[in-house]
Length: 400
Image 1 (cartoon, rainbow, N blue to C red):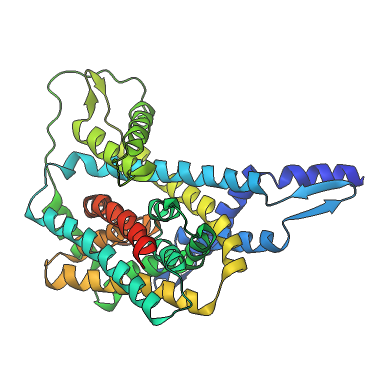
Image 2: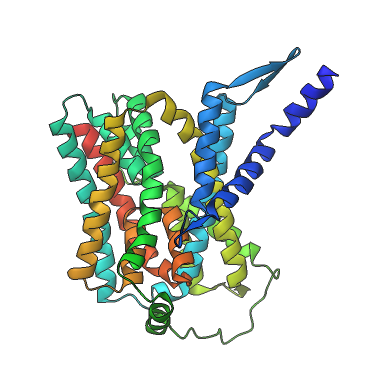
């Protein structure tokens, strides 16, 4: 009987079961609304972090003679794979959604997005340096981890760890400590700002969609559609993006990584909509599904290891520093976008999610705005912000 129970428990606690039960519970939590504010898909992150905290204390247990392992190097690598697949699905979908209009609407306003990406990350880096200078016990490695965690930037996190001679454990710890606020802070920000300003969402959405509508010409010749769901062009874009992301700039040892590469590939494939005579247009329903599925997998894959690291390394002072590194560039970026660049509320918040490299916040903003047109501002701001955070994280650990 005991061996039977052990077998059932082992099967039930497989990574497939864990992923889907975290997702189910996360959507239940995210669906709870208090005065119009909800966590949405960020509820999945909360449950994933909670599970990570649990398995930190109970990484394995025994039933009879059977050892049930919940956390090990193997489990960590599996969740990393889930996170990477989720990121690829989400970012590629965002690129494909924005692609048909992205290059056609590239104008002076786009320069504002590019500048915002650099400004937001630069402000985050300056804030991190100030924290290091004010607290002698805060190492530059821990600060780099806090900064990249607060910006939820895996490429920046990886870039900081690649610098020779750095304390990689401190960087990992800082990333895990700041990650929770880095996600929730931006997710709540994009929901609270319209409410604080008493924005009429329906009216703003109507003006926003009208201002951003672009007539996309249909191809003159008949294209060959390989299958009805659009999986071929989507998978092609992901594969193409991995190649782009793997290209490194000599000396700087910099690459866009899979997240940056798949975004660029999605924009390119979405813009052209074809490869020769092969139809690469994808229905909005398919793209929305891929985007949401990718977001959930990303949150689960990143959240569980984040929960494990959070418990083992958390300090109140570090958590505060991480919150400051998230809040200062986010609020300052919003004010600059509003009063200097004069961006509309949706373009403003879209650029903030891109500048903060916040994948979950974009998903929340799309739900709040009621239109995925906000993806264009994210897509315009994200690439340069991504490059900036990689460079800033390296400079932080090398010079301070």
